[in-house]
Length: 76
Image 1 (cartoon, rainbow, N blue to C red):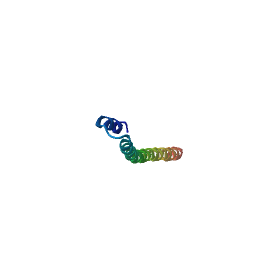
Image 2 (cartoon, helix red, strand yellow):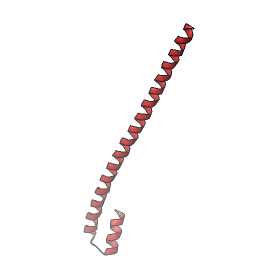
Image 3 (cartoon, one colour):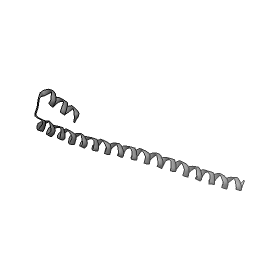
């Protein structure tokens, strides 16, 4: 928005026209920010979920192995 105002001041444009252009620029960049934030949120949630599921699987495998080892050692 500041760049649009600066460009308007340098170019000698009317304040009303500069205000309209700056509002349009603000809306466009807000939309771009929303979309990029949504994408980042999706990617981070996906990565965290994959890491969590891998950790839970690792833990379950460890429990299964320890139970298997205990049953085998008690039979020997």
